[in-house]
Image 1 (spheres, rainbow, N blue to C red):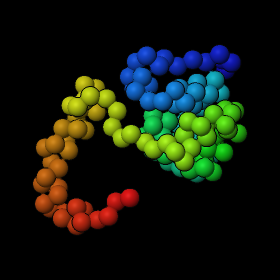
Image 2 (cartoon, rainbow, N blue to C red):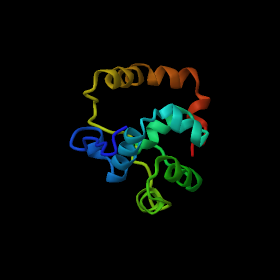
Image 3 (cartoon, rainbow, N blue to C red):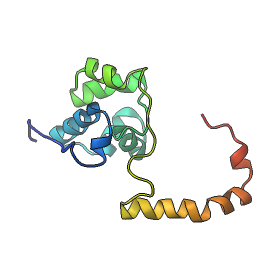
Image 4 (cartoon, rainbow, N blue to C red):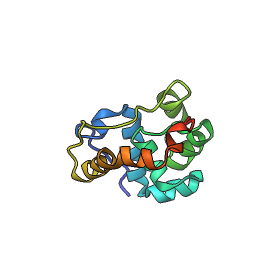
Length: 129
């Protein structure tokens, strides 16, 4: 694998997240890893790991420690960029989305969100944390 793996940070979605995420993507590319391999190392689902790489979910302190070792990224960098002070900013990109796949998912929520809420009212009464 390339020791000089780079990831473009000038295009979406990486242009919208803190630079520490580019470091994660570069380390992933340099080691030739998949999100599934990283997920297994962290004991998480691969979709959740991808979400965290894009800044949509928050790693725990223990996960940052494991990532540091597994990806060979300085723990101090991960802690400074993604530590206790950092919180995910949910929802990358414009509204409505311009990516065709994301737009179709968005459209499903817009079209069927209210009917689902009416059909399953207990969902709107739950405490989500």
